Image 1 (cartoon, helix red, strand yellow):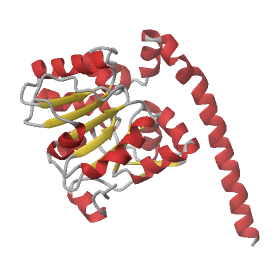
Image 2 (cartoon, helix red, strand yellow; image 1 turned 30 degrees about the vertical axis):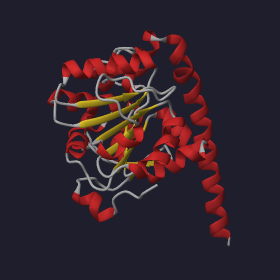
Image 3 (cartoon, rainbow, N blue to C red; image 1 turned 180 degrees about the vertical axis):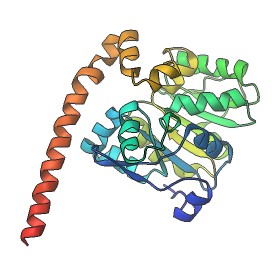
Image 4 (cartoon, rainbow, N blue to C red; image 1 turned 120 degrees about the vertical axis):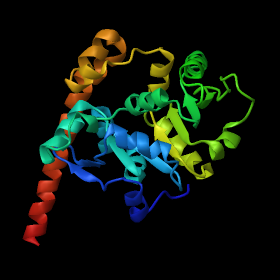
Length: 270
């Protein structure tokens, strides 16, 4: 996989350095929604890899070496999720609600601007992938949206036939929504074929574009109630994330802190 921009190039693109996320044993990039939109529309060279962290992502970061490798190697890691943003804000109170940035937030803003942009979207079911392409064609006709489903990688848009390999060097933005773990591996395998632009792991974002999943209203996310909204909308899908994973994450964080304290005592003793 080709490397992304170095530190100086990131700074020239308006990408700030990573900062520690208090309490969560990880780091994130303090970027606002508008800054992410500007970054995508700038067509950065070389390609920029975008990551994000909600509580589920933090749990994976601390327990899944492959996900940790992807996140550590990303050029930008957004605070996607109210708890991660609030933790960041305890260290820097200037980070207002615009610094809590989910994939659908910045993508919907881009579609509203209707730029002449080539987007490669890989993921979702064949039906949802095709429906998302139709929605974008109507909503943002200047955007060239090339859609491949996440199952058979079959093209689902109505444009000229192509392949993922041919589309990658043309794309200004690549959206990969295959679920955490699979999408990060796919990006690591394919980013080297990009010449410019941004590639992002977006989870269920393509389903939000298609309408397969209901997009959480912005005010709900700002109030920190997105978990409740999603639980009510799809309890069977989200109950584990709401009730089980936070407990698992808490246990992991406690173990991490105990291990770091023991390491600190060992260092002082030696």
